[in-house]
Image (cartoon, rainbow, N blue to C red; front, top):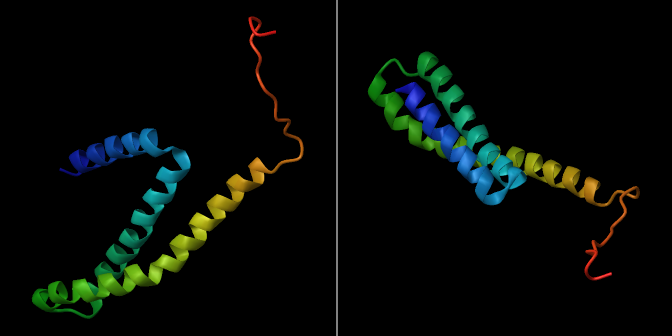
Length: 107
């Protein structure tokens, strides 16, 4: 089952990269992965330490998920802004010469 989920996620990622480009897909994937990983890690650790009753653990997942998601948004925004700054650095390089292509028929 895990392989099926990874396969579908891989195909979806390839399609998303084709659809909007590398940088947009990278920013979207990071915006999904960072909060998801933090939510999973917190719930696994807190579930072992705090909740001896599984019902209490299941009920408390939703509020902690909301808090962790909102708390991780500044980190996601900083990473996305860093990616944008790096791409803008390459665009504004002084060594790049902007040229136009003229075909032989037009010359």
